[in-house]
Amino acid sequence: MRELSLHILDIVENGITAGADCIHIDVIVSRTEDFLSIKIRDNGHGIPVEKLKKLTDPFVTTRTTRRVGLGLSLLAAATERCDGKLGVAAGTDGGTEVTATFRYSHIDRAPMGDMAATMATLLMGNPQIDFVYTHVFDGEEFLLDTRDLKKELGDHSLEDPMVIHRLGESIRTSLQQLISNADKPEAREKNHGKTND
Figure 1 (cartoon, helix red, strand yellow):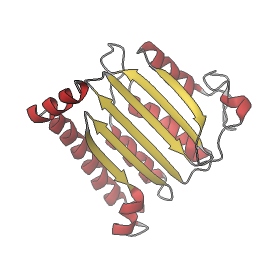
Figure 2 (cartoon, rainbow, N blue to C red):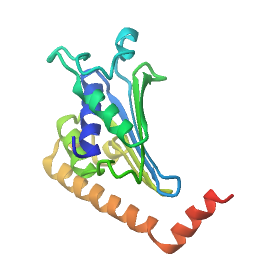
Figure 3 (spheres, helix red, strand yellow):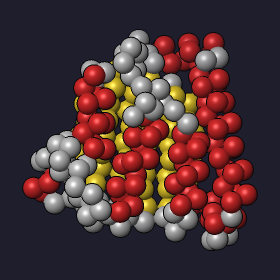
């Protein structure tokens, strides 16, 4: 996969298939510490221990609709190419937690891709599932929690294509603003100062 957002989409869909009704997606970038971390946690039925040990094998999958499980093996290869690693563990609430780390500046690191489109796709296809998406870029944070949105807009609001479209555009704008804020001189000085403490 050429973009990390597509890896995220694939891993989240695994959680949905596993019966999750709440999925957390955390993306953290620190240019001063030269890392990018992606963590996806779900509260689905989890992965059997025997499969947990072989999850990066492309011929092992927890799905019944196909015999190969390329998602985690491709993500593992992507992390290893970039001086990072992939971790898969049982979640604290019985689900699964997938963590992928990368050296941010590595020449082979795939671009983040269109997280706004990824989130819009997930929301449109799964209005019954709650998503908590946090994106941190050099200390600047964006948070989207569909549980709060449903309280404000009504339980069925995320079934409306126009709401999803506007939400996708809002996410895109917010992420662009996040990077713009992180690039301001005062933000760069603040984050640079953190590493020197």
